[in-house]
Length: 86
Image 1 (tube, rainbow, N blue to C red):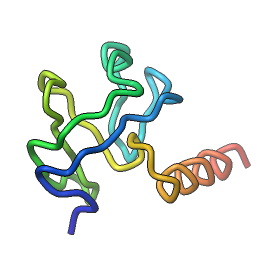
Image 2 (cartoon, rainbow, N blue to C red; image 1 turned 90 degrees about the vertical axis):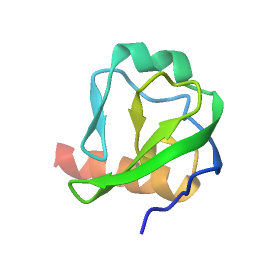
Image 3 (cartoon, rainbow, N blue to C red; image 1 turned 135 degrees about the horizontal axis):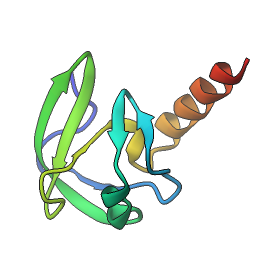
Image 4 (tube, helix red, strand yellow; image 1 turned 45 degrees about the vertical axis):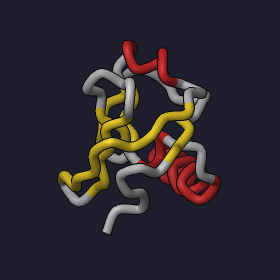
């Protein structure tokens, strides 16, 4: 079951890096324009076991849980990245 639902309002993290993957989803350079923006979720689906979201005004870009400012998701993503360095 997805963490967010249609109609929820989320804020895209400001520290996202282009050309990186978040929850197996590529963050394209063009998506940097949405960093720090607060948007409403318009579509929710799951792909490859990960939640995916379309945001109002984001012109077809797909976002994932760890791209939003949620302390729990940020902590998980940071830990995942640290484990990759080992």
